[in-house]
Length: 299
Image (cartoon, rainbow, N blue to C red; front, side):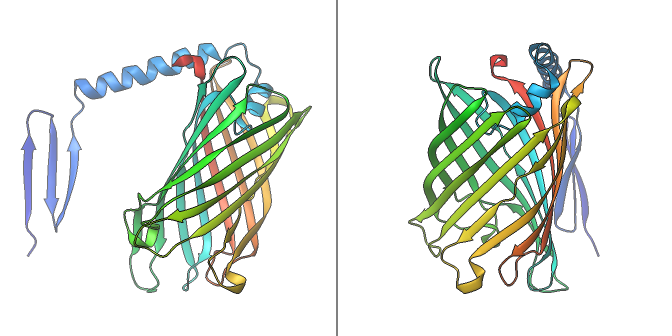
């Protein structure tokens, strides 16, 4: 027999419904929610006005620049197929806010945080999935204030043990160097990002993981572009053929304006085949991304 109770919360207008050991909250759209919606709407309106003088083509190039002087909020969803010993599907949604900090007229500190929301299968073919947050990464690039030509950024990367399950990430803190170099010339935006994270302390086994992400974009009229940005990784502590993951592929993207000169939203879709991967690694990946662009002057 199941046990089901309802507990009212008159102060917030929310109701918490519990049954079979789980609870969910429903209802409640009070003054706090109204204020949040109003603030969001004002932010979008002011942001759209700030971008009115920027061309769609230029904004697309800015969105492709990892160290651009603007606030962006990418939501990047990676679907990894044939992963694990049972060849099932893993899903990783990376929430990646990028916030620039001005260090004077010539220099910027570009901060990027990556919070992965993971859903992955357990080894048992009839078992449930593991859902939660993985390890968070934070990078701070020191970069010159430039919008074209050769651009670079260098700084530390930190890995924080925020995983909500042992299977979703290490308990060890990590850090290492990170470098990005790119060139913006004509229709092209191309370059590479490189980092390596080394574990420091902690009770879990040590790790050393390298990443190389080459990227190339060819921009077309009206914010359309061709793109390829595979993420090559090396687990230096793994044995033999399990060290490398090397994907090949690409896709298309488009920067949209909500309204004639409104809020810019960058979207893209890419597909990659992993020509080299660990024994139980995914064989291919589908990547979907939506990126909101906000001007630094907004804050």
